[in-house]
Image (cartoon, rainbow, N blue to C red):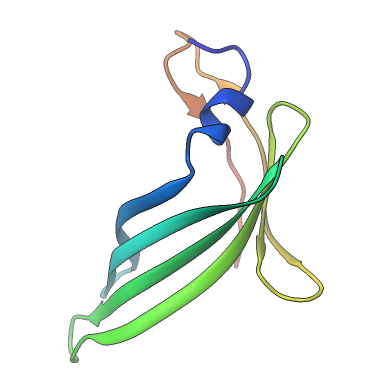
Length: 107
């Protein structure tokens, strides 16, 4: 396995299927497209259907700026001008070297 996160980060370009539980009672299903923004950054565009347990589905979309700083520091920001930080992750391999892990909290 790679000893830095950069190789994995650089492999994300393109369209991915997205299926996410946002909070109790909310589910999002759609696509996530990573577009190269610079050598160390992507613009991530998410679009799909947001489903609430007690209501009809609605179209939803959001854009993010994902930037790799150094080898293992990932900053995820809202795609706004200026960028507004959402997560700052310091990533490291787990004990057996099979999984990258990081943690951050947000309201």
